[in-house]
Image (cartoon, rainbow, N blue to C red; front, side, top):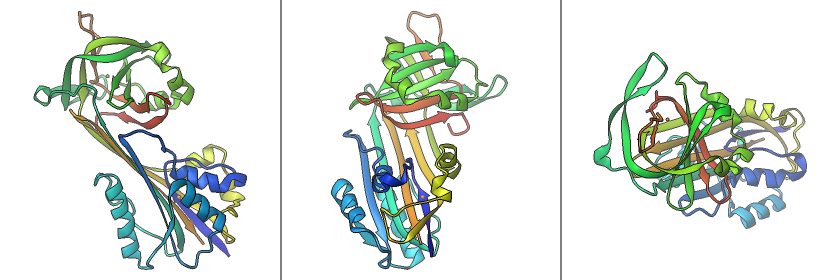
Length: 323
């Protein structure tokens, strides 16, 4: 018979000839030597799921993800998954999995947790209520962190009609912000323009300055169905002509893909976390003043990137409703 596969993860899928590397790469997407970044993996399967020894050996050798067994009790297995994700994300991501199909045979689970400290912290006593413009005509009040005369890299990017600000974390990580000049700008258009080559060339666009910085405290959580994303990437073979023979002698079918992630920004720094599971079933205002001002008082796009590799660890948007 056909075994259905259910993916819940952050990564991408490759072709059938690199199936083993594909699944393991998904689990190890953010495998970078960054002290503030933790990444853990685990595999759970039922005893009657026939896994190829080559897949098991590659998983254990490269990613230390040795298969462990489900107990067969749905409530117990769901709790085990959620407890594992909660532990690996420092108790920040809870209730990752709400259900587990009766026909799930294997689960490849990956969790990533980032905790970064600002190179220069925002004084907590300076945090105050400020206006955040949701649009030209609507606004709300937010908790705004204030940092005076802080080091920042800035630029005006005319192509996207926005300002760019880069605030450093300690440990070689940057918090990159894209602030549209107009509050009503569609953030999705900015997000879709941020390619890997853009981040590789980002430093050439920036100028280091000492500025007064205003950043709202915020916590954003997201959940996304990745099945349409995979389809838009041209990976329709995963659904119509799947070949996962590198994992098992059983015929596997991909049925679902889901990604959950969150980030919290405070005076001390940032905490970001995400989780991935693969189910294998038989998935800110610039003012003309002496000291420049970088003020996130309207919707913005942000990214957390590694300074050395320019890899994007997290990408999201602060739209005001979650501040």
